[in-house]
Image (cartoon, rainbow over all chains, first blue to last red; front, top):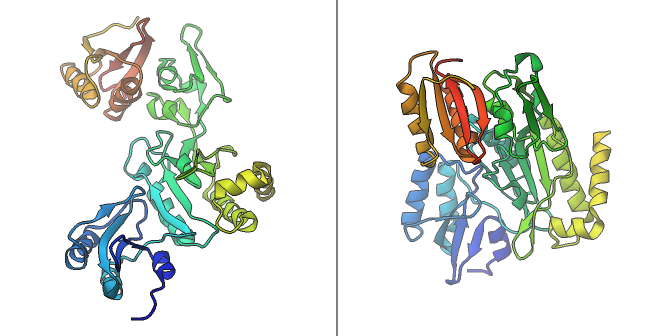
Length: 288
Length: 79
């Protein structure tokens, strides 16, 4: 057997183990969704080529440990039969994570699963100077921890109050987590502090008479990293109303990272070195 | 203060029993009658009124009590 190209193996989602010539094989998953037939195939591979178990990763992935070097091509072919393939590691776009979103969850504002699929199709394994993590969470409950990622997306809504429908019951004031709403029941009045609003939309979801309504959109977070360096991603833009604009922002962000990053540098480090203002400036340019 | 036809205190239970307990109390009433529910701030006030909405019942009044709990008046089948 010739010299093993571990770097090429790692790009394809094969992590070298402590045990010689054994690899933990990461699978390409999107939004944590795996079909029953695919699970069957994963079961067969773990049983026949691994040690009969899988490891669930921190980012909704599946790894099958103890895949032997000589079995890698066979295992890849087996995976393909169920529409599966190895995942990515190294300096590239990683698994796109997502909560179940508005298609399943009553709290969700956006179809996270569909969006994660689009993100995966467009960016998965794209080479950059360091790993780049994308996550999609459906609402401000933030089950998918948008701010832990290099680029996190969170569903939200810009609430609008319709006075003529309001019954002044006071429920929106009770559910607002940032106390942005005050209902004056006696006067039949309501005060909404737009500056305080975090676009969670709890007022819209709970209002019994649909006096609160609004169009859903995307909040985006830049530069999260939770490895050796811990930093929470920052929100530097207001709610984004269209998916087209969301994708143009992601394109611009990755373009910025590719342009300014030093080799081997994580997005957050680049941002802090060149200055957040530079990213803000480039994002403003696509706005115009 | 709104009139009431039934009362349930769900401050002694946690999710998901909060809504289960409130829902059972609502089942005792007939359409148009009003259930008064005392609940805690946080998860109960976020979720219980919304769950009633999903089942077609209408919140008509919410009172914040001095002890930090909420009293919510809900009209059965009001939506």
